[in-house]
Length: 248
Ligand SMILES: [Zn+2]
Image 1: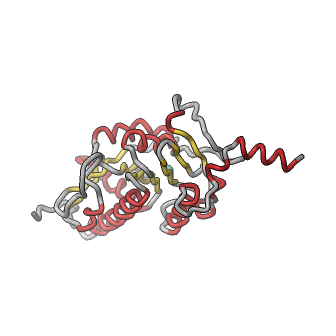
Image 2: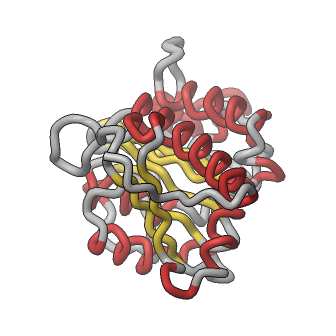
């Protein structure tokens, strides 16, 4: 019977993992967040993405889907503890006729190396413009730095550290070079995490940014704060103002 077969197939595909009436369930939250990010121009034209970790389970937006139209049925689910070979990813639940996101190994790096609860990838124009501006400064092309701006207080001090940055602290975001295939960014993203252990974000030249946090709330507010700071920094550059100042 056709209906019986459909039920069997959906049971095998663990569809219960993405079905919940709770608006805060990752399979409901990811489409909701992507709709908001789309209105900000962060995930336009199917670019960018979002992933949420709940203990061992990771929920992922798929590849190539219009982010403002995404549904919970489009969400992939995997268990971190089952991943032994990055080239043979094991999914607990896969949406029919969609492809996994090339961002997957980068999201997993934030979860495994930084114990993040959420990772957001945007193609924000402000993030891209910052990497283009830095490209013109050979002395400091791989690090964005800014201090003495109130919004810096929106960032945690770093992995396993208590509290947030202060007004006079310098926020530093490393930049890695883009590659033709997004998954090939993984190694350099992990290197940047090792070199800047306190960072919650890595810029990708001419591409966008990855931002993570211990919770969805922290990842989202840090992503918003960064976008604000990048936009401000671009306006500052136009006016000939320096991103670093010695007010103390
Ligand atoms: Zn991307």
